Image (cartoon, rainbow over all chains, first blue to last red; front, side, top):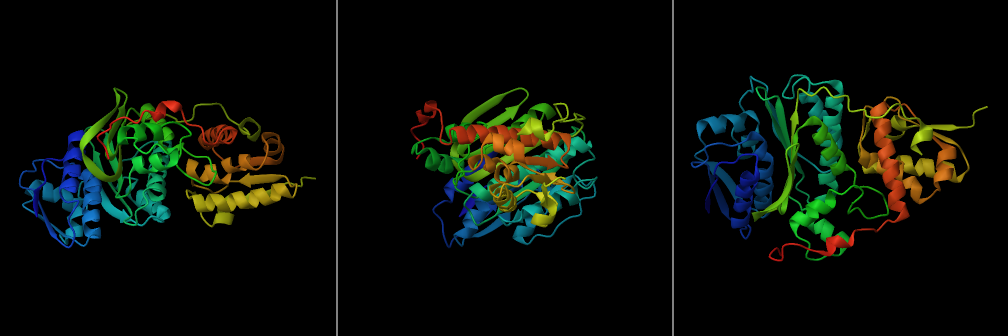
Length: 290
Length: 119
């Protein structure tokens, strides 16, 4: 089966285009899928992570997946961020050091993910940022990673990559999985069997809402992430099944996408020039906390 | 004389990264058993380089399911956290108090399920 990969930008249309590929191939097993990039005029490098959610599902059903007709400029980007190694196409050296390579992590690999972030901070990929911003950024990514590992219920792992845009002082970082999606977890927890994907994302964003069982509090990770993005004047996108959520200083919206994205993807775009201190209150002591 | 027992988190979990629920559970287990024995506990985060809410929910937030606020306030101290991490812990603690006051609350408004076309 041959499928066109159209232009993929880090926006609703881009995620929808990836979800379309998933939907059109969802019934395949032991088959062959060829992703044809000849109509792709642009591909945001960080979107390799959600595209891999689709590829992972296909490979899980023992389909063979290949890529053809990748325009040379796009091929170069996807070689620099190591994405094409999954198709046995070699890497290219990233001389500008603006990519954070595509990587597949096992669910228990939180510490390895932290090492990966360390190795791409300090000028290799992630630009030099204030200490406070670096810490909040790393904290946010680790929260997202661990959320994916806990909630995806997929053995395929967690897929990550990032791209720095030096002219715009913006860094996009994307974490995706090929799991059941936020909707399934929220439906199971709330016992609202028909809750739709958009509502489920909104539910998950409420402080204190968690689908964890076992009588443990939770539900802070996404709220903390949103607070960080607000202060940083960055952008947050969450895509899960038919739901697309976007948050920035300008807007907050949840919109249905036409096709079913096979998992969950969180993309954050941060303003790397931010010098906020991220410490709001005066010094707290143990007595103030408990 | 200070009878407080210090738990060095980094030593106990064997990592400077407080990022997993499993490690949080290990810390929770130690603190819980010491509190049950009537001990005072200092939880030291010295040499910890990264801390996230997921870990703190399990390690410390969870204590509010077993002990009263008064007991926790009287018996537990935390050490070695920077100002922003103390803020994070405060957020975790406030959330835990709300959670154990009503663990299965969710607004009736969510019963409006939305898009009927979605399977």
